[in-house]
Length: 79
Image (cartoon, rainbow, N blue to C red):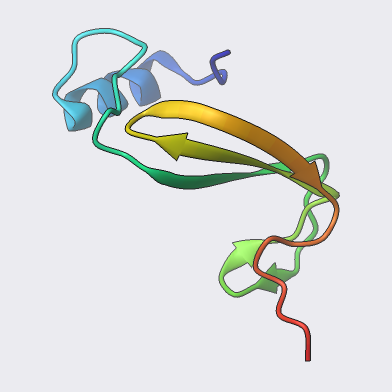
């Protein structure tokens, strides 16, 4: 799955990554990738936008190990 982007944006991404084509391997990355799903609001929580829900991808050495979707902001801290 690829996000839609202008040719100019795609060229900038490839240049920044030192790559010539998509997909760009990211075997150097391990961690969680958080993607906002749905319409975003103007609010911000801990520097991240607020969305209807979130898809979280758990990645190990560039490979998605599993993914989950949740309604609560992933960085929400209970008081």
